Length: 183
Image 1 (tube, helix red, strand yellow):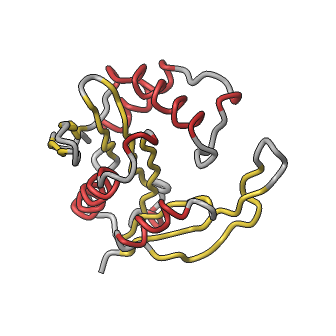
Image 2 (cartoon, one colour; image 1 turned 90 degrees about the horizontal axis):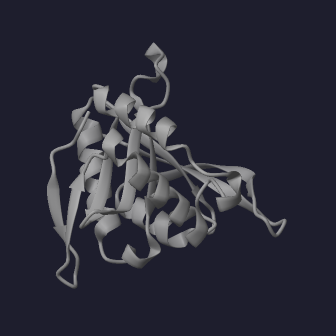
Image 3 (cartoon, helix red, strand yellow; image 1 turned 180 degrees about the horizontal axis):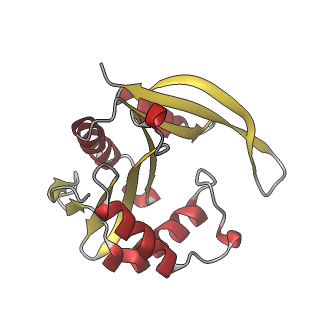
């Protein structure tokens, strides 16, 4: 599904357009994901993992756009994609239909301006409207900024996957498992 387009104003007055990325945005999504992977170790992939395939990204975006429950919340400044958030069904089995998984990335130069909280609030409201009863995510144990924002948005830490990520320098990071269970 596609969300209703909205605007967000940064503290410096710049206008951000919030809408769902569609297949026409596949190249922008590719470039955004490659850029965020290069900016911080908090993303699941490394730039060396290889180029993302715009064709496969477009297929995924078509699938999300045609879904009754999955959706994207994407942030654009002008024509540039600067924030990407996806909410998808965990599994299409009856016992899982109440659960969604959330993944999020924002370009580093746009963090700390309230944009992530705005996108997250919109996503949680939409997830609830789509019939999900809980939204889950995984976050690097050393990503204090993201963990703080997630907690502020109602997520609770429920577990930890030890050594979930091995960085290029040979060190490990645990993954904190979080969920926002709608009451």
